[in-house]
Length: 230
Image (cartoon, rainbow, N blue to C red; front, side):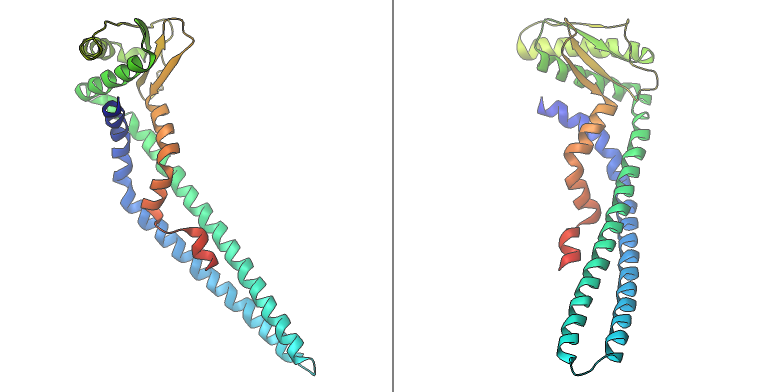
């Protein structure tokens, strides 16, 4: 099953890798712009504080100096927090756009019928192994029925040879996937109470959840919390 899962994830992850280079560069440029703006704001705030405190220095100089130092620390912390939030917001916008673009690209996978049939076979096999029942149904887009039928035939043969047990798989034509779906299948046990959602949209959602930490490292590299508090 791990080989099947890897093939499905690679199909989606391939599109993500194509966008990584320019998305990462854009993220770095945006972060640099925000940091420059933050330095300017801090310099202005610091100048104001120095002018205010210098004009009012008197016999209590030591006390006022400590107050000024504390004010600068507060100002630095405030500016750093504001900058951190701006960078986080910019990064999240880039990540959202990345997965939106990937979702649009998913529909292109079904255009190559030969490759698409192989992907469907593996998705059906994965569901069959997980459910481990003699009779299963597959939900798919009506437009995919022909290629799904061929994928089912291949999946049934491979399933029988691997587990030495036959499985009967049929298309649930009474409940097809929406035509607006990007593709893939849902494998359903006979009773209809248990299913394995192997649609492209669901696989991308799982990838977004599971791979998001490594994607952040790939795109942005550093630890933002440490960066703005050191």
